[in-house]
Image (cartoon, rainbow, N blue to C red):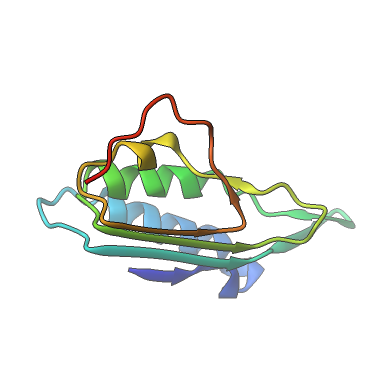
Length: 118
């Protein structure tokens, strides 16, 4: 699954998030080999004020593909404006038994309590 979620019009943002939630939440034993998230900063003007769209779903998606779909390859590329907070990657990336490659750009990694990767 290769998702450039900053490429969707703001008016369709909620629909995109809903689609990905349903796709990843589908109960299946099938393995997801690769999950790639790429984003430019997405901004939304609401009541005359510019702000970032909520991206709390992204760590949830990462947790889902690592825990339920036995992911082997994860790529997260964020391109944020300097005044926006960076995305924090869930700490499960340090202990996922199926993860073979991990490519991260412009994200925050929490301090690991332990690391155990294949």
